[in-house]
Image (cartoon, rainbow, N blue to C red; front, side, top):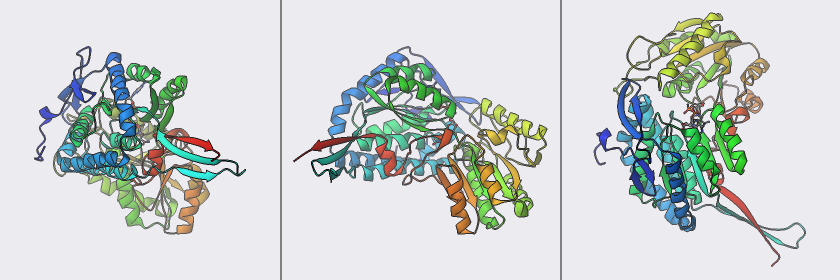
Length: 485
Ligand code: NAD
């Protein structure tokens, strides 16, 4: 792929098992829809349980050799994966924009972020160091070694089809694990395009297998029931995460869960208002609001609430909403019709409970799964959108008075993924950061995602961390050898 032109017909659409592309056992296919035009982009193979077991067979056959492959060799392969993703960044971004709907600018940002997981884990692959110590009794030596956890099932969502895959494949490969990736059916083409790049980069056959299916529950159950599989790494909704955790309990499989969020965005009176507006635009509007890290509830201190609301509404009203692939588009469509219906019903519920619409508020009457970027004020505490993920371009604003109240409001959720805090008082910023129940805090910033930092949530937002050295350890088991030499 030397040019930057995307030829969608050249993207593989069959299952990638044991280094080969093959149709599903049943021959069934799944349509992939462009959310901007509602038209069919392609169709991909629909894997059955039989295909899934073949993928486990392939991962199993490759497992011993990959675990024994020298760390430097694994590192070099991962580095080539990074180079190839950067080489094809334009094409991959267009592909993401077409199947997911996000703007080309957001899609390019995602590719840079996604590729970085390969570069980061190429560097980590040669630094999986163990530990050695003398037992407190002085009677033994303790050696700790980090070994690959084993065959891993990786399940990813549609909102970051490249980054959620590389954030798992990178550390799995660095640690010496083979894997089966099951991407979301809404955005399978990006996963297959990445699989083709991995093969080109020299990832051996069977080390990464990719399968798409319309029967995710059945297929993943069959994989999780196979005793050769030792790890589940899931990114998606809390609801599906709970189902999978219950299933994984049957075989006591090592689980990492990156689940839903309900991020508070807290603006104190003393905040730098330009920075807060800029940060709010990123935290709310990146990916059109379809991010687990999206600011879901804006809590603004009374002294600046009117100014913040007016300025945010002006910026949001000026966004160019159009087909994501068109140059200049700032907000593309949502992923599908159900997403538009959900966002519309949340806005209707808030308005029925007294919210005022400063801008937007509706789905525009046009082809494609669009929703107008929206700002709501006077949102009632019992409005549903304060309690659940909106996953759309809607910013509900609530006024608060004191620091204690801001902390209480921020924590009034079952989720705990990320929280945004704006204040020019560093002591207050750190104090509030410590009190907010969240895996990640963005202090005077609108973005936390960074491959070199541990990404993850507390409460119902998940278990474990991705990125940094923490993400690598999720794909290892600590083995302790006790000896009295
Ligand atoms: P989802 O839970 O519906 O689906 C996620 C994946 O799970 C998809 O591949 C889907 O096909 C699969 N799946 C669905 N039902 C399954 C089942 N019974 N068994 C096995 N697999 C099943 O989520 P989504 O709508 O694709 O993504 C949006 C959600 O993902 C949001 O809740 C968002 O917050 C979350 N998310 C979290 C993070 C994070 O890092 N914490 C990142 C991105 C998205």
